[in-house]
Length: 573
Picture 1 (cartoon, rainbow, N blue to C red):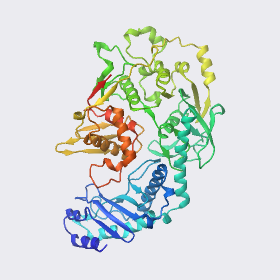
Picture 2 (picture 1 turned 60 degrees about the vertical axis):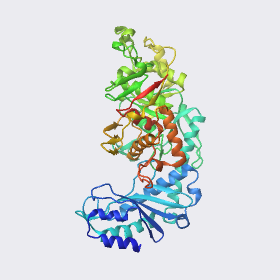
Picture 3 (picture 1 turned 180 degrees about the horizontal axis):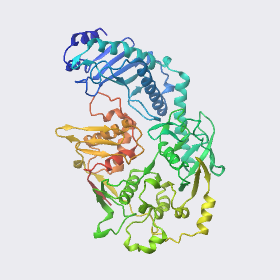
Picture 4 (picture 1 turned 180 degrees about the vertical axis):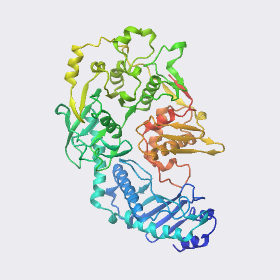
């Protein structure tokens, strides 16, 4: 403490770069250590990275709160949320120029993700925060820095990093809620289901930009139709009844504004666990479910889209299709094939964000445009083959084409946000009013090929420096290129985007992307390393663990690589 006070007194009034005297040092303050991993060189630059570490003999977290791994993730998530709340209460905030006075932590959203903001083990607990060291202009404000580091931070630590400081009931509920969701997700596979929505779940959100639940006075609680009601048995909550969606092809139909897309949105987000009170904490979807949409203009690199599109004009080969500016139909076909390659087990598709000519070709169009003049095999003719040949299920939101009744296993109608099982009625209509369309999909889904990314095509440098930067949750700057992730809708936090950019760089510099491993082999290798060593290993700054990574799924890592416009691959038959 005296050393820190001495340094801050000595550099008071000096140029801002004198804060670098703190970098790499560890200071003992009462019960905890303050470690300065990085001191910013300018008040407008990225804030300084500081770790606050307390030995377990003082923090007193029982091993039962962080073992097994799902409890550790939930505990670290809970403490991160508590840190964000307490910092808001304790930190005075702005103290001068730029980011001066800032104290912050990587604040979570509604999902419980594996993060690097808090680390806990049998030896210690450590919080990683960001601090804007204060200045007026570019002159150091040493006294104000001392207030932040020697008064505010100890108060924050006292209220967040000791077990005795936390609300034990809230903490245990947070952990048990996450553990229950994980257990329910495992039950899905045992019961032949791809998703489950509990009775009483609140699916609508506050707004299109606010993922918190709609006020319960306005929202209609979910209620399963009797025909689809099943029971799951999470270990802590006990038996839960709700709607189970079986493997196969499921249609979600109904009028506009009756909750079709709201249900699909809840399912796509429920590949992750949700916090207590979210309304979706008993909604679970299989972990490898992938949202698919059309993406006009995206680049495609040597993807075998022949199961969907062939016989293009000018004899263009669709077994290794490339485009700098793909259409709605070719981009959606590529998205499906890439997701299969990456290991997706369920597709979530909304008619509203799909290419119409990719989804359906009705009888009248078949009569007008002969098959040999139409290169597209519509999704309706491949959706059953996806399940029969590859065991990939589909949940499809649909409002405009009853032809899909012929290929569906289940048809669920949303009416004023409540579901009805209308499978029998839909099948009856299909028998009574035949579509007369001819299936154009052949006997099987078609051949799949593997692709091997070439490391020389991935350049993270902008000039002489490596430049990788997340820009929200929708794009990553990678060298001179921008990876557009707007179409990858299951990224739920910019900390996942940040991790994806550094994961690609890590795979490159560690030669995991080596010109011989296929894309699924690369993501499998990365996942194994993350399981074994944690997210910290991907930091480009050795010995300076980051506090703002959240773990992405391998599906999103692959999706980002596929959207890097410089990517080159070789095709392996």
